[in-house]
Each structure stands twice: as structure tokens, then as C-alpha cells.
Amino acid sequence: MRTGHSRRWTTCLVIAAVAGSVAGCGDSPGTTAAPAPRPASDTRQPTEAERAAERAALAAYAGYLEASREASRTSDPRHPKLTRFLADPLLTRVRVTLRETRRHGAVRTGTLRSDPSVTAVSLDGSPPTVEIQDCLDATAYRLVYAKDKRVVPGSGGTRHLATATATRYPDGRWLISSGAAHEDQPC
Image 1 (spheres, rainbow, N blue to C red):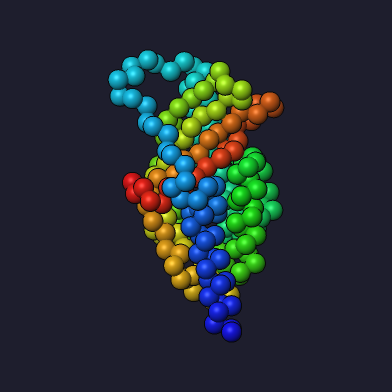
Image 2: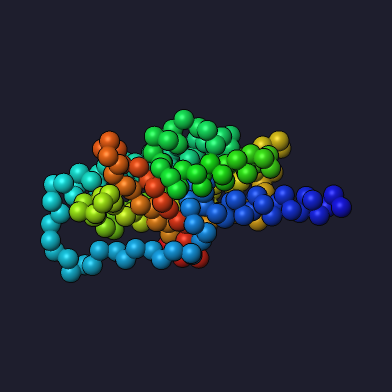
């Protein structure tokens, strides 16, 4: 009986780990298509407004990754930096993942490497958005039990594609509102 219960906890933790290498990137791996990269034949130069949007979106994305890493070190779903860089529905997904990870006594340790790029800018949309594609290297980013630092079985990280959407809100802030880890798509 105890073994079955322990196995269920491990399964829940692995699901939390797979749900997103960055404390819950959003959708399950491979459930959303990655945005197509900008065509090489697109020689149009971005406007200053588009370049500013790209910079702001990438800054929000970097802040999101850092806030997620900090929150994951203690599995804190109320980490104050999360709301500085994330918006719903992604904020809720990240918090749920952190809450489940904490409930099972796990935290994240190690290093997460990122190499993001902008794939699309839509300033005419309502709201304006910027699509980001990233190659996340989570091979040195581990889910471990907080009590004894043992690695959670089956939670090994990979190097995979991740996508995110930055949205500009009426107050002018760019926040990451959605994201997905595409663990079935190595990079």
C-alpha cells in the first residue's frame, strides 16, 4: 500500500516536471505548434516600434525565467516576482505547478540555459503581442526532494524547444501570458 502511494507521488512530481521545465511553461509538451520562424526572404526592416516591442518582450521573458527559477528553488507559488513578469493564464499554471511540487516536497536546483529569439511581432492586434521561441537547456536543471536532495525519478531535463507569447497590457507592461515546452522537439 505504501509503495503504491509513493509511486503516485513520484508520478505527480514527474508530471509537474514535464509540464514545463521552467516551473510550468504552460501547455503539455507538444500540444501546441511552434510559431514558424521569420522567413529568410523577409527583408523588410522592423520599425522602431517593433524593435522596442521585441526588446521589451525579451526583457519580460528573461524576467519570467529568472522569477520562475527563484520561485522553483523553494517551490513558492506566491513568489513576488512572478506577477512582475507573468499574466494569466500562464501565471496560474506556474503557480499550480509550484504548489503541487511543494505539496510533494520537491524543489528545483541547478542551471537552466536559455537562447530566446523573437519570431513574430503583432502591434496591430488587440492586444499587441510578441511571439518568442527558445531553446531551453534543462539538462542541468533538476527536480529534487527538498528533504534530502535526491533527484525525483524520471524528472531528468532535456534540451528542447519552448515557445511563449508576450502581451502588452493597457498599463504599457509587457508580460508573458502563455507558453509551452515542446520536449518532443529537441534543439
